[in-house]
Image (tube, rainbow, N blue to C red; front, top):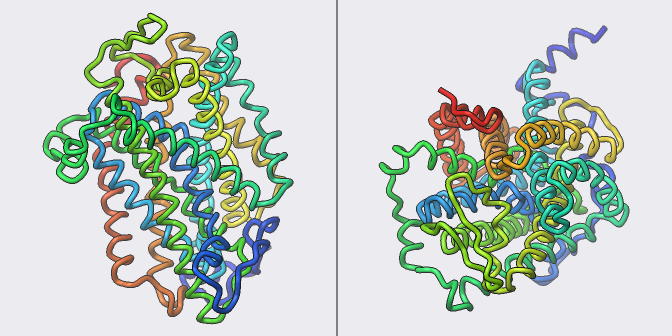
Length: 481
């Protein structure tokens, strides 16, 4: 039986006598060297860069693609401000998460176990697992669509089943270390960003109205927004796809992959460069997400069809599965065939990249909250099975009428609803000197962080009825009351 004294410590909010220390993600903990002394800016930046890049992959996964596509196709630029706001809130929260990991040497899940009431462990851990499974559902569906586009003879249902074996890809990559994974993901992100940059800023036929974009980015019509339930639902999905709850746990662990020293100068350097890394990586993610929305608006909004160079006509209506038509956003640059091929590869790559971060996040929350350790491939398999089951049921039930984009959007709303359970503990620990010492949050991050918590929580509560109705539609194919 557990001693009474330990029970009392478990429910205490005091940091006294914390649980025995164990490293987050032991296989990569303190494996990346950082320059000491007066190293130049770029040398230091390149050494610290990487953790935020891995995090940013989750901000450009199939879930983001689906919500951005539907936002642009249905509402043109009207939700561009949500993409900007959610990206800004993501930067704020991820900077705070990285700061917590660097300053304390502990990740968010470990802090929750050490310093919150013992009864909170199970619900907090389970909510994280729900978020990871919802995110993985997006990777399953996105990868399945990519396989279906690459190999049309593979049905969507069979493609979903095939994605169960992507654990082999993860194992192959993890054998080569964290830096190689970071490098591979950097190439994928840069390629996608370059294509959209050329379409928006170089090709005259796809150049958007920048004045109109700026208007909707900085001066949205708020009364119209709150009167439109569909718009609120997509907005919550964009937030959930951008500010992912499990990424708040993961980032505080990933920053510890660097060999950090505890003297004041080294700590300040680590905090500064991790903040720069986060801002740059998530800034790129904002550009990619905004570009997807803008291209969807140009190609789909107000149109009931697109005529291809081959003479084929693709028609649109209210039930169009935008994720399966999204390759058309790259057609002006690459041509229809190349666009389909490249989009499918990019979508598959984004799903696989996010699978890596989802698996790492699963390890962090399981080890942090529950002190359970299992092999990464077992962890990956369990998560994938939890995600693939509802995907198989939905696709098998609805057959060729299955709307993957609606399923993806719903999964991102589930992520958004989970967010307060991660944001509030993060802000609690990062705000207090007894945990952070002299590196606790300054007034700007303190105000911005808590404002972010309030905005997202309020939107969750406001949009919950519409999310429930949309969930009924997705699972049954019929409207809910």
